[in-house]
Amino acid sequence: MAVQLSDIEQEVIVLRAIKELIDSMVNFEMLSLGGRRPVSEISIESMTHQRFFNIVLVDFLSRTDKKVPIKQTSYLGALKAICQNPSFNVDNSVEPLRVATHQFVDWLEQEIEVDNVWMPSIDIETTIRISRITFMKMCGNISKHNFLRAVGVAEELQETLAAKGIAITVDDAMLALADFYDWFHRDILSYHSSTIAEFLNNIRWGIYDYLQPEFRQSIVWKSRNPPMYEYTYPNGVIAKLAKECYWELMNEVRSPPYVRRFQVTKWLKLRY
Image 1 (cartoon, rainbow, N blue to C red):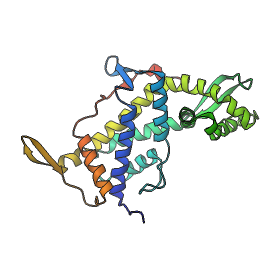
Image 2: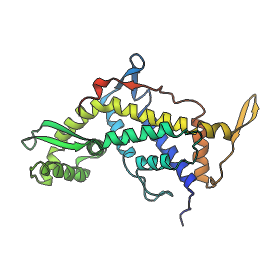
Image 3: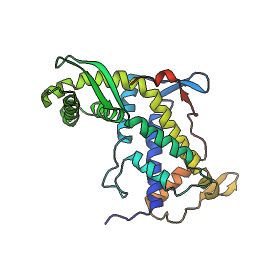
Image 4: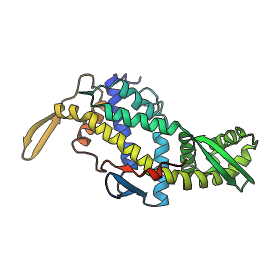
């Protein structure tokens, strides 16, 4: 029988998982950071890195596995719930995380309109209206899977075109996946990558700010030379997995995130 985890244990596990996902997307192997503060320029290192970025992003935008010992939810949904009922909030330390999370969710849920989308595989040119989160998940799944495992994405494309009065078969939609990917991954997602990285980095810094009071009251120095320490587990953190995640979180917020806070130029936020 699955272990029943307390709310604080579930929060610790989710925060650890989210931080791990963001760290795998926003780091100096994946991207370079230039420009003068406060405005910065972000570039993804290669198309291979861009594809990996999209694959991890679609995981971050998806739901947790129903077999893990926490309530199944989307990662962003879990973040919103944590911000609404935080376990470690001291002097409103959760506020930066709350702001960063809600800004990203609002941005993702906005619909964009892309004119003159040409799909030569099926000889169709049209305007596509779609939410950012939908096309990013579609592109991520195309990046992850061979076309024979992308029938679900083809059906989403079929439904998107049907909303514009264009009826195509699933077979035609599968043929058009490469054309859709060229438009929405290689062009539009590439354009948005800097903005997405800014949102993700803000969430990571929000987690850091939120947990600083907990870190300061939890750490106990046993010796300074050599430095040895331990953490005092909060009430309710009992399960082995939760303890491990708590320890790792505290270790990771000992220092600020290695990618500084940055703001992307407005010229990368005007389209799509």
